[in-house]
Length: 325
Image 1 (cartoon, rainbow, N blue to C red):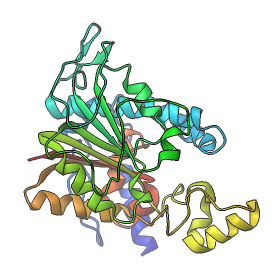
Image 2 (image 1 turned 180 degrees about the horizontal axis):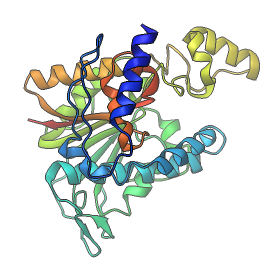
Image 3 (image 1 turned 30 degrees about the vertical axis):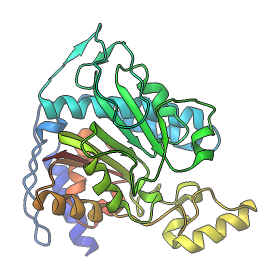
C-alpha cells in the first residue's frame, strides 16, 4: 500500500513540474487508484494567483499564535479568508478581476437579525452581498468584513467565545450551527471556517448552511482534517496516538483541560467524509459541487484532494465550494 501511494505521489509530481498560473493540471490512472482528470475548475481560477507558496508559509508561521496570541492568528486568518471568498465568488460568477475602488454596499431585506454594511474598497464579487459566518467566534472575521462593503452576520453558540476578544458586533446572533436561527434562502454566501471539527454532526451543519443560502448562492465549508498535522489543535501531533490519549497527555503536561476537548468540542472529521457528503448533496439535487481543494496549499498542490489515503494526511484543511440549486 505504501509503495503504491509513493508511486502515485511521484507520478503526480512528475505531472506538475514547473507549473504556471494559467496552466491546467491533468493527472492520470495509476494501478490502485483511478485519478480523475483534474483541471482547475472555473470557481478556483481567480484563486491561483492568491494561493502561493509564500502565503502557505505565512499561514503556517501564524499557527503558533493560535493559543498564545489569537489576535495575530485570527486577524491574519480573517484577512486571508476574505481573500479566499473574494476569489471563489469572482470565479463562480465570472467577474474576473472585478475590483472597484469606489464600491458601495447594496441594501436588502433583513434575514431576521440586525446586520451591517459599509462602503469601502472591495472586490465587486462580494460587495453588497449578505454573508453568514457560521461559528464566527469572538468577531475577528466580522471586524475584517466591516471594511469590505458587505452585509455581514455571524452565528455563534458560545457567549463566552463571542465576547472573548472584546469585539462588539451588532450582527452577531447566538445560535447553533446544527439549527441555524435564520429563515430559508436568506443569504448570498454562507461559509464556515474551522468549525466542523468542533461539532458532533458536521453534515447536519452543512445541510443547514445550504438551507439558509439563496438558490444560486454559495456555500463555502472549510474545516480541519483530523489526520492532518493540525488535527489535534493545541494537543499537537499527539492526536496520532488517539484523541483520548492525546487529551490525557495534554492534561498531564499542562495541568488543565485543553480548550478543544476530544469527544466534547473536538471530533474526528475526515477529508473523504466531506467529499462524500458534498457529492451526495449534489446527486440529491440540493446543490452543485463547484470545487474541493486544500485551503492552505499552493494552487499547484490542489491535486492532493483527489488521492484517497494521501488526502487524509496531506490535506490539513478541506474547502468545499457548493452552489445551491
